[in-house]
Structures are given as C-alpha cells and as structure tokens.
Image (tube, rainbow, N blue to C red; front, top):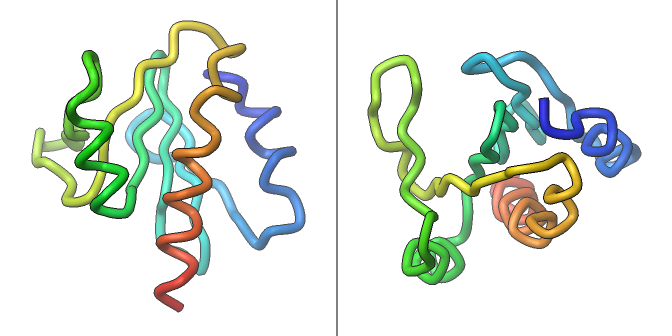
Length: 104
C-alpha cells in the first residue's frame, strides 16, 4: 500500500476515517469518501476546476471504479510510483477533503 501509515497520520485530528475499499484504503469525512489509496494509484474527488486542470496532465485519467469500471463523477486517478510520492499529491487530496467537508 502507498504509505498508508503516513496518510493516516496526516489526517489525524481532522475527523477523517479510513476503511477498506476497492482493494485499497478509502478516506472519508462524515462517511463520504474523498480519496482512495490503492497499489500504484491514489484516486480523489476534486472540485471541478482542479479536476479539469488535472485531467489535462499526462497520466491523469478519470477514476473508474474497479468493481464495474464506472467513471466516478468528480474523481481523478493520480499515479503513485513510490510511497515517497504521496506528499506531492497531498494538495490535491486536501482539495478533495475540503470539497467533501464543505458539503456537510
């Protein structure tokens, strides 16, 4: 798993919970997911402006649910080659967290 301990530690004190999802770890706020870490990727729900910009970058496709290959609206898939790559995507993960948390 892509640095799950580091991610859990990063979200400590924010009300974020984690659980297993799609053979990875799903991070939720108020029971609603905003990020999923799986082997080699992180998928996250993003505000439209950030998602649109991210999808123009090489190697950033929409996220397709592994269970049925359905595209999850507002989600993008980010490549993680090494656990050390997680800090580089934290701003996008935080944007997803903020977007979901604002809907409460």
